[in-house]
Image 1 (cartoon, rainbow, N blue to C red):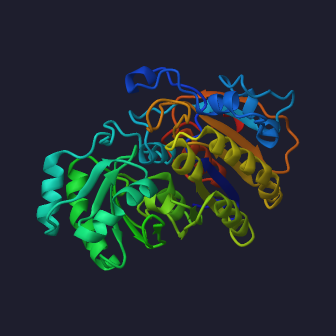
Image 2 (image 1 turned 90 degrees about the vertical axis):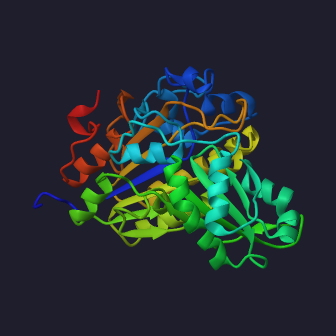
Length: 394
């Protein structure tokens, strides 16, 4: 395509789970009254995000807890999820143009007996430990000693549609854990899940530590995505953090794993030093470390830390680059349970080097407007969603 501008750059930054208020159908999910960002602002003393507010975060409809600015530096708005779900895969897939008609399944009360029986038969294990929704670090502390004694895998899930298998590397070789996950994959996919995750750990109780040998066995996007369109057109697509896992590497030219939010920001800045194209980063700590664990103070501190890093990230970008900041769902740390929450997500769009005051992008009907806008920016044809660039600002 002669009109493709593969040397241009977009940084698409997902602040995992930073929702900005309940969606109209939140009550159907048991999430009426949720507001991740607003409730953090309510309960965390001294909470402020001056750099995000300068871009227009407080100008977004439904975020009265943050002060608006008179002349926001970015375009601002919020997005509604069109798909019926509130998990990582559903949100991220909608970004790139796949709007699921049927949501993935989650198992907040543990997996059905038929799933566990099928897993045991496929792997030859004589039973599992756990079989519940849990924090990965908490469940290995709780069941790690019994696992070492019995050699039974620790099987658990989360708010996402995933089946996770934890095992001690000195008890179950990592290669065997991977075999278990491969055997579990078709069972999990048939049950409506999106991923099986190997979660190896080491150490002595109670100081167990998960290792870098995590491996995701991911159901790939069932259709062509905007990432595929970009890659086919010669645009470099780099996934930072868990992006590669979410898309089963489909449509990505490069993947870089990260340890935590700070490392994710550092890697994104490093990418800006040596490449063009789309740099697509997920900062997962907000969700994994603080949302699911219902820790508003930790969540608020992590947001303020990211806010303090934002100017350095923007300084690493060149004039004409596009920065898009959003989220994939909510996870209100003040809310009941440990699940994600069905919320609007923020949308901040900044053309680096432009002095034009930001305008309202309103409430977008679907997350797919992200993919449509990125495609337009690079001059790549794409038909799902409505671009918020140029004349489509409103």
